[in-house]
Length: 105
Image (cartoon, rainbow, N blue to C red; front, side, top):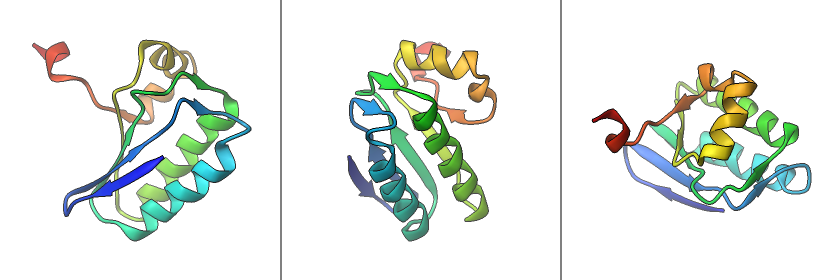
């Protein structure tokens, strides 16, 4: 997981898995990113291949923490498989999912 920042947003790249085995470390890093930055916190999920209930909990917890810090959590590059999980759980209605420019046109 890599964190890059600029004045308007931070970008965090998530690895291939966000599950019970990786969630503790990812949660800690995301909370540090929320607490240390300003503007949008953008999670780049383009490499994410697998997410489970624990990983979804990390996303929801980070979303809540960002809101309390007056920030916005944005999911970028969500693969179709992961988007289906978000849709089935209706988290796509709670979390802000960035729509690619090509999909808008």
